[in-house]
Image 1 (spheres, chains in turn blue, yellow):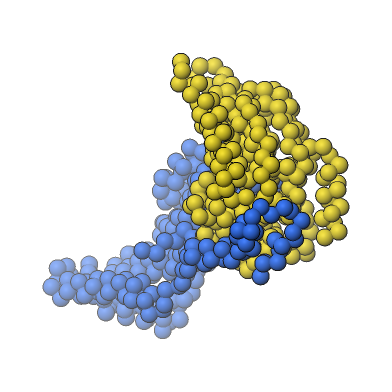
Image 2: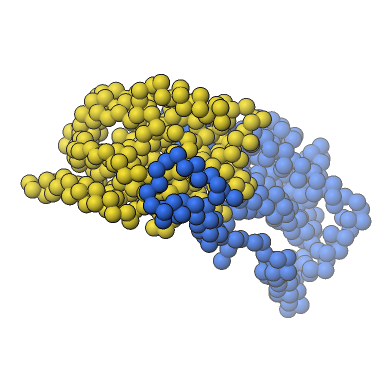
Length: 306
Length: 262
């Protein structure tokens, strides 16, 4: 391929041996490259099913068995511990009424919209805190402190300020999720190897161009971890808001479903609402955040297969 | 190719690729300012290959950072008429979120090459370092030697007249390092770049350079210089390389011994 490149002959060649070696350089290099290249394939589907899907399914089956066992052993009466089948029929009923998807969607759409708002606010905020020393010193500690404040604490003031409506829900979500997202980005930026910044500067990536081309992509793994946590906080905050601030005008979400179950002493309904809240939380994580995180880590060679 | 000739002529018009004039650098230390570089004067001619050699504490990396413009000298001047020098590190410093090709394209983009030309230029540069077909490879899929070659291509993509190299092969295994010496010599001769190469490996310095500059340690001063007129391509095991290496090593050890005498 490149064997003719070095035979220009305009330089004095020391020995025949050296000349031959120069000709062989391309081949030698190709050999070294081939020897040292790591080949990483993807796991076959069957293996993924056995390793990733089977264990959680077994765990769920075990929980159901233990639950049913407790019901049969009558450790508590039916009003306190409903059987799996009564929860199941509750679910079926909601499905047959055609309200199940509406209820789930009411909460999920609120949660996702709130999360997107938190993303739009938390990202620039995190970037400013990470890059501007004065701002970091001023609000950095408050931002990390806010993370440990349970977002349910924001519900009463939000109701007083904004009333019983959707904006109050979004306010609670924002107060819960923005600190997480901003903090994730701050720690992502802090963990950017200084070498990347130096390399970026020698390439001419300074100021905003440095932030866009070097700092942001380098901080992406930490940022994604923050987003994941931000979603968890959004969902939690929303459920707290929906449980406390239920009003007929707000539409029926999962939180209200839970609260209604409590008001009607409908234990299967309470269980059902809790399961649905849990399932939505897990599903969003599994469908959106985990694949995104895996993709980013894998493309950077950071996902080590054991 | 016609443009390459024109560029070479244009480069020959300036008398130096880097001019380091009476440069000193001190850092704040626990006992007052610590002098790291003391009155260094050094020119790198266009197309010249110079190695900076020294033991630890000679400030060779500091000097390279100064020439790269990453830091300012305490006294003296540094001129690089060919624009911001390209810099290669001991670690490849490739960005893992980009493919090999996109790493090179980022360098092109940051110096204002229009989008339409970038892909082709990047492929050409990969060909130059003999990594044709590695365009879409992620950094972690490449071996250590391949990464340094992509880093070399990225540095060349900056189209600077001067390439600074900070022990770029120190972390590689001996076989790969040897091959990359051949490769660097070939690329240097093909591109007409000026190279300022920092190392603590005497044989590497002699193997590669036209001129070897020995720095003393604490503070770093130019202790001695040698012109290496052994014709390229050389091998690290050549007897002339070994002979000069022995002489330089003696001098280097002399410099080091002075530090144990008080």
